[in-house]
Image (cartoon, rainbow, N blue to C red):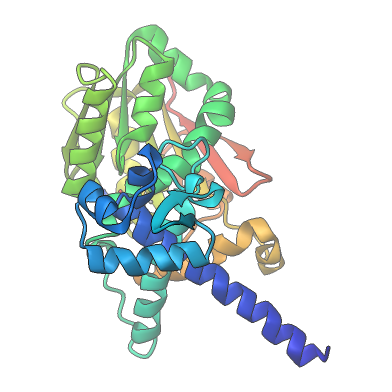
Amino acid sequence: MTSADELKKTIMQQAQGAMSLDLAFVGVTNGLFDALAESDASVDELAARAKVDAGYLRRFCESAYAFGYLEHQGGRYALGELGRAFLSTAPGTLMPFAVQTVLGAHMAERAAGLMKTGERPGESVLAERATILPWFGPMLEASFGALFEREILPRVDAFRDVDARGGVVVDLGCGNGWYLRALARHFPRLRGIGLDGFAENIRQASERAAAEGLGTRLSFRAGDIYDYTVAEPVDLVAMNRALHHVWDQKDKVMRILRDALRPGGAVVIWEPGWPASIEALREPRRRAMAFQNLSEHVQGNHFLRPDEIESALDEVGLATSTLLFAEGTEAVVVGIKNG
Ligand SMILES: C[S@@+](CC[C@H](N)C(=O)[O-])C[C@H]1O[C@@H](n2cnc3c(N)ncnc32)[C@H](O)[C@@H]1O
């Protein structure tokens, strides 16, 4: 085969990969995989079960059969192994890949259109697609929850200190609240307050905390990080993948973080670790981060190097240290306020 043919073959495989994840997104967001988990079904039965239109569903099922998500026999569809891997309850569910792919396509389309003028519409771009926003929180939870509980949580001493005091953790830009839920499950005495700019995230966060029986220890409210003030100093302020969203006013945000803490309290910032050199972006683990930084640009943001975060915390007098995870692609920077 000529190298042109090889390139075409590679790109065709990649195109099919994107298509298959676009299709999975249709299934995930309409609860089709979950509805089929109960038992096999005809199109009409499944349409009634999932409360969707049978005409659209027929085309989805044919396509999902073509890509191996569903099996077909005698006019009935059943989940195949691949479809089962996208179930919301599947351990290590593949759901985030479907959501990321369609979110990525949306952001790419916006970047393509905005490149000439340089306009950067901001956070609102995330909410432009009604089907994507409700899946943003669950996508992040499924992508990072296990890493947090298995590797990060055991290595951050500040969490244990807050629990010992029965203290308060504030999560700024809390998304669907998964981080506070994980902390509250592990540490029975700490309490949490989450703040986020999207009302849909707060709705999900409150609902999920209540469903897990954590509603009396965790509370969530909609609001802007830039306006955040505390009635009384708190023990720990966490920001997960949120600092880069407010970096354009970093001096103000750093003062907010420092002033929110009691003496001896800690800031725990978790961000993707943007590398110091462009060559590192070629590493398979970092490619997605490089693409995501283009979509961050549309939202008015950019990713940060861990040393930039450390310097900003240093400047407001916090004593910093950085922990790296996932082969250095994830950075947790801790800043302690002098006791
Ligand atoms: C990438 S998400 C991370 C969400 C969550 N921390 C997690 O790890 O799943 C960034 C979050 O920051 C929130 N955010 C960004 N800017 C904000 C602001 N100025 N005020 C409040 N929330 C903000 C967004 O609504 C979004 O939920």
